[in-house]
Length: 90
Image 1 (tube, rainbow, N blue to C red):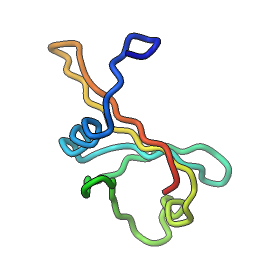
Image 2: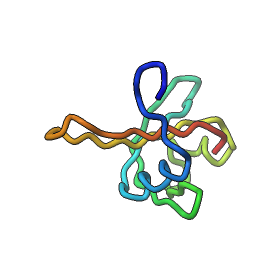
Image 3: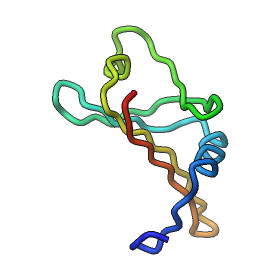
């Protein structure tokens, strides 16, 4: 548990959860301003992959910039859910 009482998941469990969804959000800098964009993705072994067209706002990914990627799920009926956040060089 973290200091907020949330369960911290192991990396393998996070990857398993990511594999159950297909839509996430990537956070990156565009023109020195923060941007959060939806992306369709897949998990390939231990790597999150997604594609985009050349010249898109996601070109920052090809330059190896630091980005964040998040996927979450909420169950209204049980008031439970999960969130996976990754941070690193694209």
